[in-house]
Image (cartoon, rainbow, N blue to C red; front, side, top):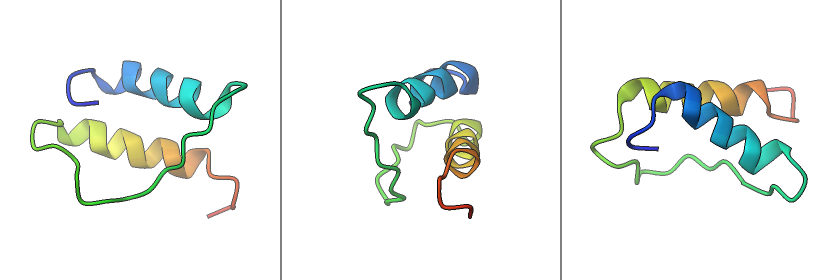
Length: 56
């Protein structure tokens, strides 16, 4: 997540969560690395909210 632009990150996120065999559990924690671009962090949260099954 620290190197790719938001597009490749979102494709990896979809692969890890939405495809058969996925099982990623999104959990906000304090260990996002310092070299992660802010736009990737925003993209991560936007993707999590967009695909959350809980209607949040």
